[in-house]
Image 1: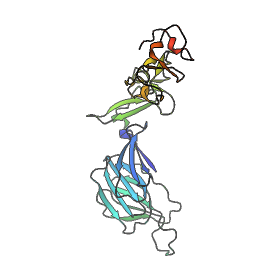
Image 2: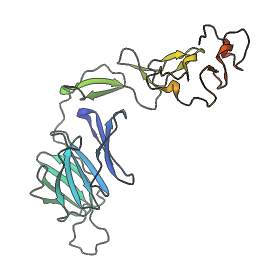
Image 3: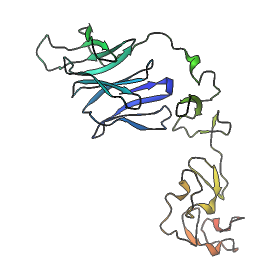
Image 4: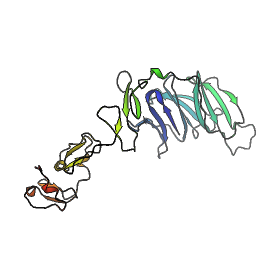
Length: 277
């Protein structure tokens, strides 16, 4: 179960780990963080009220519907039991929170609440009432009040080539361009367009984060972090120690053998021009 919140370019989801939790991240996958980590048993649905920045969730085992701020603070229990059996979907609209209750399929009582859509006040949980009964195969709810005014978004009219995210981490939201994860694309120097990462020269190492894009090969596994993501010091061979040079093929040779006119690395990277210790 996941829900998108476009106003802040956020996505919320339920993580069914041994201790269930509700998490969030920006839509490019960055900034992942926990929102709700306690008081959950089997969370079954989440929803976001874009009008008032409220996160709602239901728990089918505990028979609860709760709300909180988007960061998990100001948590409020709206409903517990009281006819609530198996909430499978939530949808805020206006002053109300609607929920779909699939009920207990094994309950033989024909009057049991099953396949019913309810609503209640979204802030207090008061005034719960039935909207519609006998709605078969309930699994999702959606609510639409009017077409949103996108002109208020910092991404409106932006020049991002692929993804535009609304960064609300600083005072006032601002548009930040990003590239789709898993595509191999990186953000170019103009901070607007995505493209293939530059190719490093044979005597250079490519930083995974492309920041910086390339560093001299001899800086790889030298005990000093040059790549901003420290990828130049990750997976270094066990043979590496001070005074040794890492060949591109993974072999190690004594650093005093660099540029001595003899091939000591099988791939000859110890004799690449301009190599220095």
